[in-house]
Image 1 (cartoon, rainbow, N blue to C red):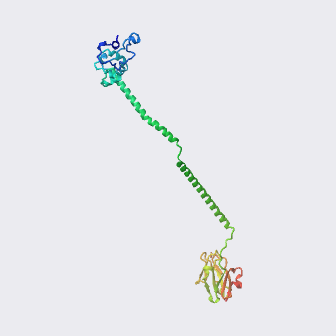
Image 2: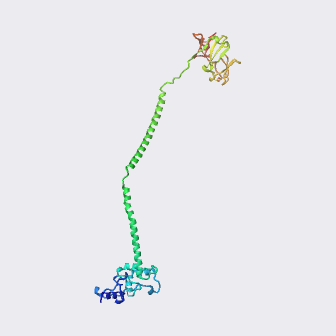
Length: 338
Ligand code: FES
């Protein structure tokens, strides 16, 4: 047999039935193990042809999608069986001998209307190609991210910039200065308090000297006072009256009478109409001589030392007192006899 006859026998059609110029083999009928081997090549008995894939004609109903896919997956065997039948479609040119190019050049019906296993196989091939393209696209998109990742990792391991170290050190130095300031302020306040306490304690080591007013006062010449007169000009500042009277012992005398009540120290008032000293605190009354006669006062008013100075003026010395109950009013310095 010639090669052409052998191929025709393998396809299950007579040698003369193949139209001229259709030497190309369909994609599904590509050399497969199911195709009958040539006796010259394998020196084996031709194997029985594979059972044809179910089709709309054989089943009497439209193929389901699963049946179409199964027929497409087993399209090689079915294609060999269909090769025996003359295909109504024009065969591909010898220049497009590869099965995929031949199938793609044909008008492939939609998957829902496809009944030919070759069409189904073409659909599968296109779906695979699209998936491969998508996979390549996703890989191309993922590539930049995979390249950027090391950059991020590198940025993480980059040591901190010197400026940040300077800022951190400046902040910590500022905090230390603030803490130091408050410590110094606390110690300064404590030292000031201790110094104040020490100064207050040291004050007690020195005597409290008061400026005492002079105890001697010039009140004028004896002729300035009239008999029975009570002069009050020195009462407020010096605390005594100058009295000229003979009420005590019948002698005309001038004496300096203290203006301090002998009860509790209130200053009595001179009542000229009543010719008596009256204490406003508890009502003690004193004669013009100073002798008490009413109220709680226990004793007469006191007298101060009265002398005639070299200049002819009477001088009162408050440092020396004379008390009647002690018999001191008889002392010549307790009065000035006119
Ligand atoms: Fe003068 Fe009491 S103080 S009567």
